[in-house]
Image (cartoon, rainbow, N blue to C red; front, side, top):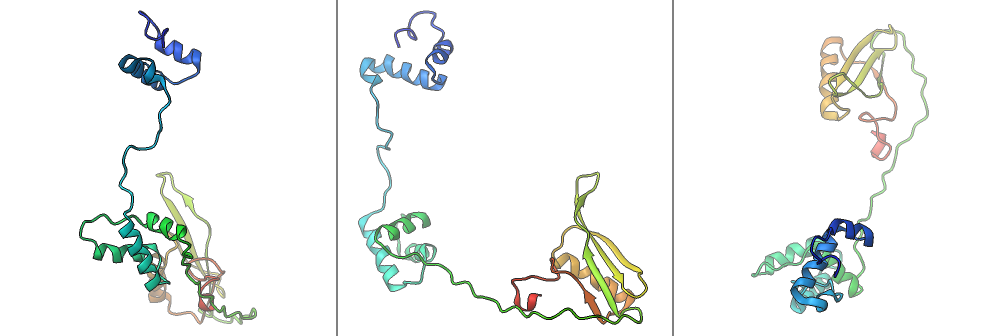
Length: 210
């Protein structure tokens, strides 16, 4: 501090020499000039005041949890908002911490296990057009303008005729479904459509794999 407050002192050079940032250096200089040596004492970083959570609110949270043991912090907070008249409802994270401190178990969603219908690979007889269509996405790529596209290919297995090669913006069902509706209107309905397990045609975690 004595070197920093001397006339013509280079504060930036002194901060580098002592291994501290300039913001930190100016903070100590400001304290020294205002309070002298007493301003150089370490101070607690704890906030002087904070909103906290009142004991009454904590008791309401515990009471609601005991009444609704399967409800988590988010639902309990909604109930508190309906009861509170001052608008000082704690956040979801604060409610979760309160429940942890009082030993209330966390509520976890029970994931419903889906039964997947598996079937053996069937040999498809292809004798005429529209017996089997094969469908696949060939992997995304970007055009020169930076846009990402998903190339959808649809082919008739008998004639090997490529029915569609569409550059789609995504593989979502909302985008893919209209493309197939256009194909059905032009070529009719196939007996079988063969796809792999990829989106949006199949899903290993959905009922029946579809």
